[in-house]
Image (cartoon, rainbow, N blue to C red):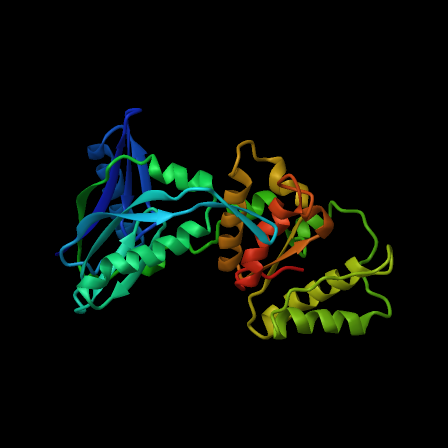
Length: 333
């Protein structure tokens, strides 16, 4: 049995709770004290290893904790402009760093879930300043001030025992995909047969629009483009799209493709959320599940995306999705 030592960075707040972050992962636990936090994190690691033979990679040989102060002038961002504050702030950034078993160095920024490699130990502080400044400049003043409220961090460890020679039986794993947010906010299309029986509608055929159907299929599948269908009411936009989706779904079987389509209306994104930031978190989870499903998101009311989620277009759902579209992390029709 080998032992993998995972560094934990912890914060003990005056309100009587402790936050623990497992370095190098997105695993976080809040509980009454550090001992309970460590127990919860270790229990989760052990369950993942036992059930899926899966565990996070940790290459640091002798991790260290250090707090580096970064000077930044926060700014409010509005449309294409920025409104910086009149003074600078000194923001404490805790980092976990050390030499790896490959001979270079790695530094983790746990509060940002980011890391970077470096090859000269003396470069650490300069690189932390560089990366932290870039990350903080993307945040508003509220996030920066929240980071400044964190108490002094502490470094601790949990140890996971693994067997590198273990023969794991993969046959017992259920690979059925569970899409909690997708299934809650969207509808899979085409509808399954049991749903079709309950829907009384006319045949969905794009009469004399076969060229448009072919064009949509080409853009969605061959060039992986984002597609918007524009036209007067009742000209057949939905019929073209439905026909294209059905043909792609049929081709999935013939050409071993794996595309899925998920239909959503803008209001459903925010209708089930109560708290500030909750719909953004739901959308991020939805996008993660779309990646797993090789999914394409079908928005039936695009203009409403500009009116949903915030005070105006600049902080709407559409603006939030824009970044993911630019990064190629979302395909939209």
